[in-house]
Length: 209
Image (cartoon, rainbow, N blue to C red; front, side, top):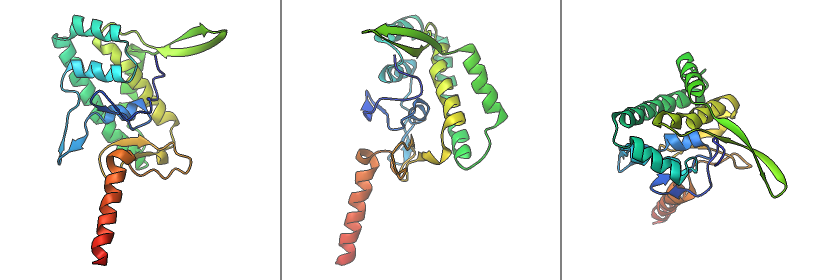
């Protein structure tokens, strides 16, 4: 299982986008805008499980067990709604924090409450004569999925350089700029960077005519 705070490098897995370099930011990006309107990438509990599978935070076995036990329950529907509400509250909090504001006490209390109820755990692994520690969480019920998300959000607010946490110049996607120069402007070259470069080139061509 991966560390909770980061994500793998490939930009698309399943139908989801992973351009944020942080789990929390990639979660915010599950409601992108396309054709002038928002698109909900988490329409049901099954989609939420697929997103966690795409992050490598859930094994196929754990995802299948959660789906079998809870997939059609009112509990899973309530948890999905709670995830969406947390996502939009944290999106607003992030935008305010990027603007220099202090995190609201209600958000601090909410994240602390989630981490207390659904903690990440640490275990020792030994392989090939080497040992390492990894974080994991118990995925026995739908609410347990809050564990890595709450920790990732709290870690970002506590440790990240807010000047490196940005929203794409062209769309609504958020990312952590980990480049050496710190000049990243787009969610990705494939999604927005090339499109803007092509538009700029076309504009220059028109200007010469």
